[in-house]
Length: 184
Image (cartoon, rainbow, N blue to C red; front, side, top):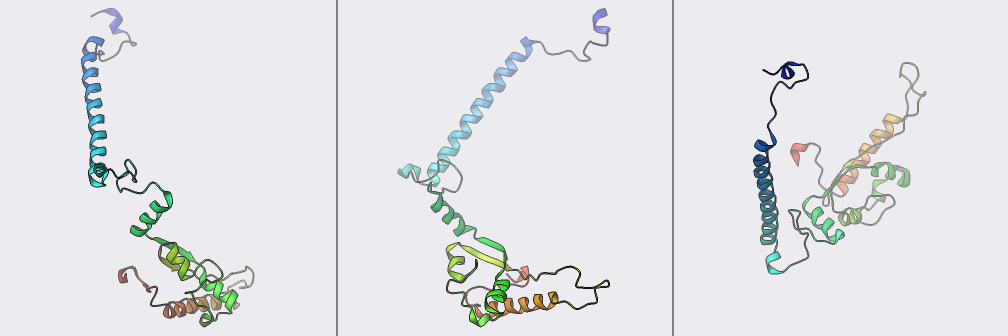
């Protein structure tokens, strides 16, 4: 054993020489190129056959898996037809309270309304469902030291829940009411 290899700076395992690793590098590089070209050809062939490229149709993305139109608005409409938007927070009860003094019969959601929510806009935006939100401000300091002083916050919240139920009943032909996920 050579005294140089016994030192602490010597590697524990011998490295492969350049002669031994060169064929391995060539084989690995060749396999990588073959795999990459095969994958690219497969994707173009698969997309072309599946989405009409063979027929000369050029209105689709060159890849993407679902053949969306190139025009963004048309692509968005196609996506929304398959996966509608679910609005997770509409403040319609607060708007009814504020604008219509809690009078749900004064509101027709089939026509444009102030605020953000009405049936024409929900349909135009492809909204497939929404969650009602009830909100009442809870200003601090009114409840007292032991939370025993009555405040208007609970009353206001319960009134908004009633408004939500009334609007759901009024427009039952347009939107269903699903209080639990298993009822969907």
